[in-house]
Image (cartoon, rainbow, N blue to C red):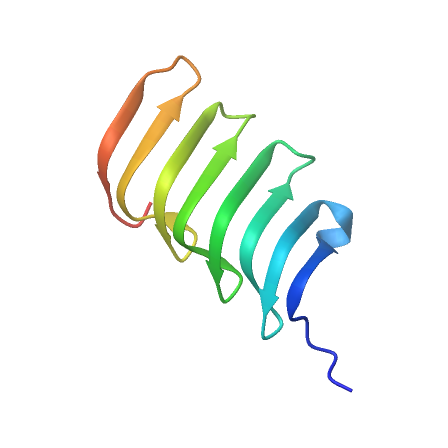
Length: 97
């Protein structure tokens, strides 16, 4: 029997402070929603090697901003849009965060 995660599922991580709901591929998160820090932060999108990778949406309610666009190794990377809680925003290029 193979104990690797593959397909749709839900997993609690980091002693329950992180929750992933989505699809797994070869034992890694592939696409879905990761909620963490007591629901104050979330990421919805693609993953590679359990890191944010490709198109996604990140929101930090505590710091008061959201970002939609491409990610590379957990960092904003490419043409995206960052919106602050006062609704000011930046739309343009990001490079490694």
